[in-house]
Length: 369
Ligand SMILES: Nc1ncnc2c1ncn2[C@@H]1O[C@H](COP(=O)(O)OP(=O)(O)OP(=O)(O)O)[C@@H](O)[C@H]1O
Image (cartoon, rainbow, N blue to C red):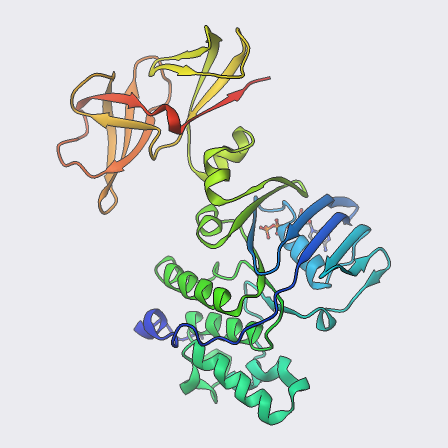
């Protein structure tokens, strides 16, 4: 049985800035097709990572994220297209350079530690080419960075979940790979631990300078970790950009829904505006008479005030999430209550009549077919 998490899981990382430095590699997927079980999983898949960049691959379950990572790792062959690492073709139809010749570090959701090897042996496994003395020195430095020096003689089953994650990270960065491929690296950790581990892992990735491709299904995680976020849908990139770009200018309604719940209002464009029960919304670029969906994010899209001006509504539910109110407000003419997150205000209570003001800058407009 895995030992429980301890305070050490939150505080036990080594000194920042002590990870070994890699020479970052560029990675390119060029028109990659992969079919599995007779179904296309990657479909003309295109993605380019600049050297040293951290890109998060985000998407619904089954969208092809892990398959893309496995292709980059050389575990999965391509049916068409190419994969290039530093401009060298490493995957082409019928030709797949093995993982150990790609200069990559891999980290999986279940950590895939070797149960019969000690902590130190696990981390030194990929360092055999260095010779024993250099491998031990480099392995111990990686363990020191993740705060596991004292545990080098233990076996993986003696470590807590958080410590196993740290060992898996140390093992993947110890050989100083130019490219790190991480598949859901935090999903097996509990929520309390995940934030600390995420921050520390990001610090390690930055120190190593390795190019990193991280698969996740958690939008918040992608936005925190990625220099850019790539949204994958049915085996293709639906959108790629910085977290701010992809959150503020989602390519379509379904991309917008991925990053937060939305209040969605249907309207028609009249005189350059969509008329909604919450007031008019400017619709530049949409023709007169066009049917649009106005999507409002709970954070910033609308504000609740005790006094007008604004549209009258009634608070039907409220949760206090440590400094933040999460409210639902019923407004005449809108079927579903409008979701609002804003700084805590004890004066706002359920049943209270309030005024809603739209913040047009945070309101999204999409055309409807
Ligand atoms: N070996 C296989 N044989 C047949 N189908 C497969 C195989 N591996 C994956 N698939 C299918 O390919 C699709 C994409 O799988 P993949 O694991 O890449 O998705 P994912 O986006 O990583 O999903 P998740 O978030 O659930 O891990 C899924 O529909 C999956 O069922």
